[in-house]
Length: 556
Ligand code: ATP
Ligand code: MG
Image 1: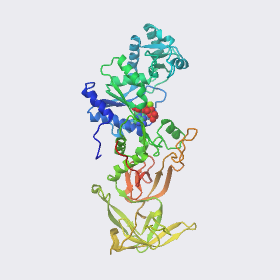
Image 2: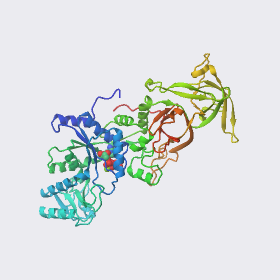
Image 3: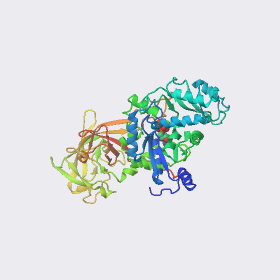
Image 4: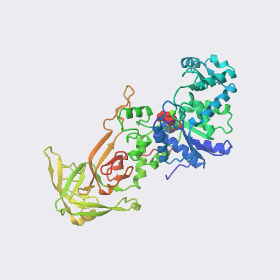
């Protein structure tokens, strides 16, 4: 972007310092999703940040599934996550990893801690554990098992691994400090018994490492230099550092936290989306009303627009929320010069040009995008019968309405001046047909004698028109009345999806395929729905309308 701020964000400043002081020689980042749902726009920020830093410093970027938790993982999510990251353009090369591949090393790491007297097997139940933990005001109490000998701990931990205990019967705790003001340091659990089948390791393990223990080990094994995560892990950093220190890794990774990306009034939480999917309120995780990456792609957003968006958001330590309108701004900016501007009629009324020869079809050469000649031109057919949009005609126009009404002359975009003479209504008073005459001298839409018309409207020739379905979207939740109901459920907007079944587009769109997008002049940007569109039954999603009152906030 022009005017791009040259100042570095706080993470780049940390990296510069680490490189200068010799704490690391290269930069190696990773993106570590848990495969328990689809990625959303917030994850896109993390992906592009991590990948962007690796590129900027000529370093490496790893893709790692953090699949240490066997309960929720599903291979459907693994596949969707890979597809989304590829689509965003973050290239992990041959460095695709699974945390579960390190289970052996994690087990060895736990044994090492036991041998150093830094971990012990505890008999406390989850409830007792909570009691012993103390509160923010009071220190915790020593675990009665804390005094076990190294030998006993080694035996018990092995027995845990060998399936001798039921879930919850025993845990392995790190021995740190029960009086620490940081609750995370009060002898945290690092291994638990869970008799569950893991999607990758099957039934090999019945003990699984806890996140705070596993994550720094994963980073260290992979040689990650800067382990970037979100703010809620700030209080866990002392534990992260403790783990890498006690395990004596040679080049310990460093955890850096940044603020999550939040979109105002937009639902991103997996829990909510899952419910919408399961209750069939939305058409899957990629429903175009959602902001999962799959949904944004299906709606017609581009990787470039998402990159622009996360760059505009910046990287910070303070939580804040960004307006969805900023995302809309980015997709308009991205598509403005890249897409053809075509004519489509979403709410058709038939127009008959009474003085135009029956059965004649003529073609106009129309430039695809007058701001970008590289996109070339196309032929647009014109005929005696056309469609125009219902809102471009009024029987009794108010003042300053310059579009079609009886007695008024308008320009049919790229084609001719036409004058409306009469119209026909059905028994309900709905206008069904408009009759006009055209001026052959105004071919190309140019005034033959200097006379002016104030309105220019779009149209589609009826005989060659391609019928299509168009889907218009609003926020899935009701922003006006509040996103959440009192019981915490989502307050759904009943108008979030508006399906227009009978729309007409130019024949140049007949072969459009999934993800192809266009500007429909005067209406917005539209994208072929990759899931529902068929060769002979086109379906378009409106990505965004053309107009916006949105103003970019001042650069931070
Ligand atoms: P959610 O709570 O929204 O379901 P999560 O944090 O549980 O997401 P993970 O798979 O654990 O999902 O996240 C992978 C990475 O993405 C983590 O490093 C996490 O910090 C980061 N991340 C998640 N949500 C956001 C967000 N809103 N903005 C920026 N980064 C995010
Ligand atoms: Mg998580």
